[in-house]
Image 1 (cartoon, rainbow, N blue to C red):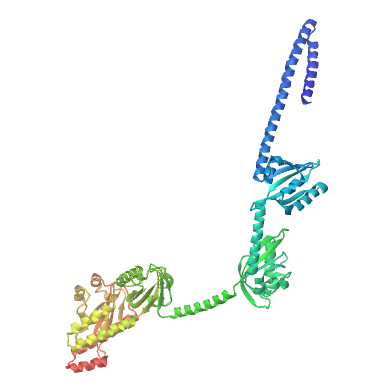
Image 2: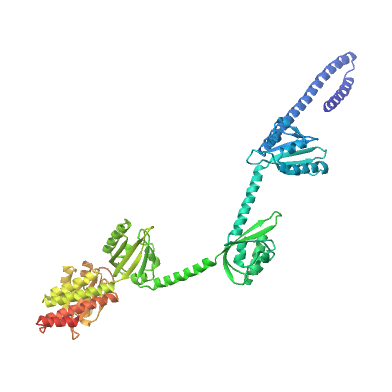
Length: 619
């Protein structure tokens, strides 16, 4: 029709327009006849070209349409294969596509089948329901949608097919068949999983699970909830959450939080809560919450509560025990030490600060050996390395602790290796006073022995100086004696340079003449923390600096009548001042020096027996 219409239009336009032009332009009849012939030939040629062009375009359009249809058909077949889908038609018999036959497990000879044949292909248990559904489709035009198993007696797993069909506007019955075996197995696995979880929730006595609708009414209540809260299933069903287990003071807050969650607000986080039993008593639980939707797309709140009563009781007892232990540890006079495998401190009780002067927080993380005298620190490092090598597991020894004030204190360290992490734990006991008392008693005995042996006074004073320095290696001790002309002479100074001893020998016992001169004149303790800036030392600063001396304090010792016999000079190689314990210790040694000087000067002690009596009274 399109080609004929184009031809008629072209012919009519050509004849009318060409005749008009010939009549208007030509008056010669002979020439007009020739032109009519040419016009006819031209018409035939142009009309042929036009017909060819229109036919060619139609052919191209048809080919493109056919290619598109073929492509879509392949896509449809691929989609059907991927989706395990086939199609069928019904006109009194079923006409199955190739894909449908493959799903049904039939060959091409079964491409056309009756309803009875189809039913015979299905499992006997499914035939009646499928037959009713097909009759309903044919008689009532109700769309067909039913799943059924194939009859496969020798297969372990059944093949499930979904039959769908409907009648279109033209009365043609079309449908599809799809393999839904995986979906059916997934549904069965899900039901089994749900059943297992339901049994788990029902049979687990310590996990209480409750379900609530959007009005917070109970829709699920397992046996553990009954055991935890005291409400039976019949008592709980239909009751609101806040009426059952929420303490009165929190009911409005809980209801508001749930309503906010239902409206799209923040979820209620899992947390430890104190809820209420039926008898009004409180119970601690760890409660987590989940908002789900049922098959009617209605929100449901599920709460999973774990009873924490026993844990809370144990935690309370443990907390009380830890508090008692911490109180005990904090009140101990001994230092409690914990270190890592590299002997870096990880815990110290308050006794550490009282002993060392260092705060615990600034000591944690530092090596234990850093807090001891250099020599003792090296010795301790070697012993700790031996522990790390497994040579022995316990260490107990005495060391000199270097306090924050620069003083040395004797301590007893006890460490034990803690397997498997190789951590060390132990204690540090202050034995400085006991150690000093022992050394002081030994010094007393030695002095009295030397007095009994009538040893020279300089030898006795030299021994006193050395014993005092052994107790305090940072001290440089000098003992000076006062003569009748009120001048001081060096009697013992085992570690002071000879040049310095010569410089101070014979100084005047006068006020503001060094530490010893001032102490001998005033009869009182003199402390100079920095020799470089103190006015008492203006005449001796160069000598002291050359000897490497930076601080000095002096303590006079006297006879029984209170007359000054001499002085103890205690020097340091850096600015410092003595502690009360240092002064007390040196005071004890001044008594020994005073006894020795008086013994040497007294003529009354002429026999050994008299000296022994004095030793007894002194002791």
